[in-house]
Length: 295
Length: 295
Image 1 (tube, rainbow over the protein chains, first blue to last red):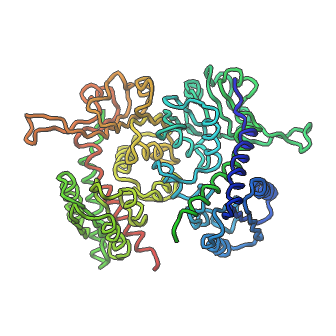
Image 2: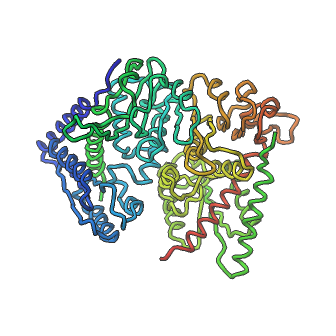
Image 3: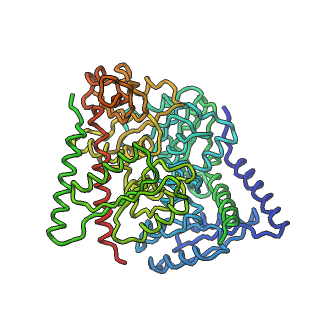
């Protein structure tokens, strides 16, 4: 059994990005610039955005954190987005979710210039991904692809079963694993809350990607020998023995499932740490595309 | 066994559209206007475009056929597209494929205003579809959904297996059948040329949608009892007994498979005739959205 180590891999990626940025700097070129809009004071959102800004600093990117009050109107946010769309110094930006109730999230995400949409949430990027065109791939799916690629997990002709059809993980993964090339060329089954006989389906899978958010859902009897198991679940389970009063738990009963696997991601330390690294990678890509554009 | 009769259903849809157009006319409103661009003299393309124009006439739509010579440059075509994007009288338009070799098809399709893209080929429409937003759905997948809906084929919790991952049928169908609602909520498996043990997979399917283009590929032993079989294949097979020297053959060994099915589409007369009806439906939708827009 080989651990797909997201902690180590994400650090490798950050080091690679930093090396590229160092070259840019040495050449006197503009470095990638990521902006993040944070509306309101949600504690988890503050932490996430803070980590993203910190990661930018680690690799040498410029970053701008735009904090707006929780009373911000949709119109105010939309005009801030227009400003970022028009600001040539910003290569990519993210709008940290969730947004306050008075703001229509979909309308906001539609306003983001797809060329700066480093979260890959705009329909144009999603459609390009589904049509095998170059695009920004959302960070979590992109991170899974990167783990598969770096560890040389075979996907061609394999049966990949995905659990959960969310817009940010399950659905994009189902598309990506069935595309031509590597990682891809899998036979893909997408399962969800309406699926019957889930055990019958998962136990045929060569690769299982679980993005359900139910702790310890995937049991050993649902997995065949030598399967690859990728656990995207991150649920906070109360645990008084931990300093924060909770522990992060994945969808997979790791102790029992891991014994049957050829590859498996731990939680924490698997897919989770990859997301910020992939956001940086998308921002670097945005910078490169931006540079090559003629205005 | 119930035949999913696309010939009859498409006529029903055309009648419904015509009734709506008659109401528009009676109210003195503008009727939907579809334009089609045809570049070159490909015989099959001429036939297809001709059928689309004729269908417009049948339901009372305005239509404009724009013929451009086979020597048309990409720039000339792009500027014609810009013209159609800006022409408020045109509600929707299509660019008949294939295009001559000197023209980059992807660049052309990217130029189409997504709000007028009644073929549903633009990445923005594709992405909206995958993200459960309202969009133009490509005609063939849309026609399959319509047959499923009108015949009340149950899809919720069913296992749908799709054969073929093309951009215009297989991939969009795999997304649509797994979306929430009806038709949808299926567990979806997308298979393709790299799939192993295809018979093992299809024989577990409640619903099979075959879009492979290999005559008589799907045999009775690949299908379980009471399955629903939708045949998107249309291959011309030489046949000297026919006036045209060929017959249209589907992917399914109809004679033997149909005996096991609860529902099945014939070829011809199944999915094929639905496509033009759905193009008309998309054009009607474009007109309605166009009307509700404030300029």
